[in-house]
Every structure is written in C-alpha cells, then in structure tokens.
Image (cartoon, rainbow, N blue to C red):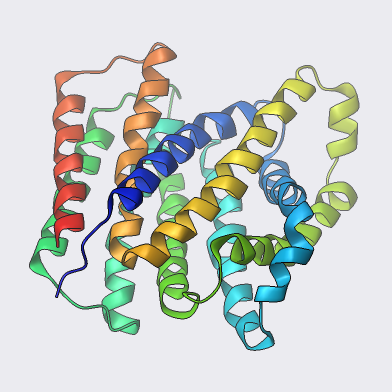
Length: 292
C-alpha cells in the first residue's frame, strides 16, 4: 500500500529546495576567496556552532547503540559530500553542480532496492526516470561560464550523490525513533570538531582572513551556507525522510536545479525554452515519485 504524502511533507520539500538550491551559489561565492577544503571545513564547523546551543537537550535522545550508524551518516551524508561538492565547483558552474545533484534519487532507489529492502513501484521508477531526463536536458542546455569546463569533475558530484543515497536510506531505516534536531546535532557534534581543528591547524585560513580582499564577505556567504544551507536544511530534510519514504525525500534534488537556475538568471544567464521544458519534466517526475 502506497504512503500518502501530507501537505506538511510537500511544504518541507519546497522549503529544502529553496534553501539547498541557493547553497550552490553561496558555495561559489565562498570559493572566490577560500580553497575547497576551507569552504567544506567552514561549512561543517559553522553548522556545529549553530547547533551547539541544543547539544545538551538533544544528545539525551541518542543511545549508545545508535552511534555507529549516526557516525556513518555523519561521514557519508555530511562530511564527504561537503568536500566533493566544493572541489567540483572549482571547475563546474554552480547550476551544473545542482543539476547533477539530481542523480541522488536514482542512487537512493538503487541502494534501497539492493540493500534496504525498498519496495519496488513502477510509479516511483517512472518518476525517477522523468526527473533524470529533465536533469539531463538541463545539463545539455546549460552554458558554462568556464572557458574550458572540466566535466571530469562531474564524477565528484556523482560520487557525492551516491553518498547521499546511502545516507538517506540509513536515516529512513535506522533513525526513525530519533528526533530530527537531535540527529542533526549528533551528526555535527561528531564531525564538526575535526573540521574546525583541520581548518585552523592545517590550512592558511587565519592568514586568508587577515590578508585576502573580500575575505569577510566570503565568510558571510559560507556562514549562510553552514547555518541555513546545512544545519537548518538538514533538520527539515530529516523530518521529511522520517515522514515519507527515502525515495520521495530524495526528490528534493530534482527541485534544486530550478532554484539554482533562477539564481543563474539573476546573474545574467540565459534561460531558454528547453530549460522550461526540462523543469516541467522534473516536476512531473517529482509528482509521480510522490504519488507512487
């Protein structure tokens, strides 16, 4: 029997899409001054700081038996992708990175079917296929601002979507009983200190802040990325994953390119009829995945 998607879940989906769709342009702005490693470490460390006031009230919900799976989700779902995406965007436009991120539902489905006993429904599969076709159309139609874009860096995004697919299935299968806020606090309490230690001891972050032009502005962009694009959005996403199934929650990545293209339009990029067609196909895919 299919699971009915509530209005609240659709609102969660829309909210995350807006926040995460804006994250790619924020990452791009941060990379103007900081290295990919610094952007990733800052993103994780600032997320931990944003969640720190809730640490004592949240960690009481975490049991010792939950720590192995939570640690895995922390590394695979929040740690590794932060570095992969920041590195990829040194050679790929933010809109292209957002579009490639749409592969997440496909890997969520594959991993779910292979390892997590996800039930197979043709409507969901059809939704994934339509969403993927729409994303491919947008990749083909999107012009790059790089003189010679290095699309081999797209492999980093693809590996990141595999990480997300595994993480989503783990949350749905093993973390249903943990409040979303508590889960998020636990994740960043695990990886945040390591990110902060590496940022300040193994990179020239302090020197960059003291000497680089536009450093404080770039820090502001990454702060927005960490606090809203990571800490807040992840809480909402965990709520969505717990309320719905793993596949539907992952379809947020089909809506992200819409927001990313909007920011691109404001930045002077041309939006064509083919882009509109691709967005329509993506929206059809999200509807079918939710209906299934």
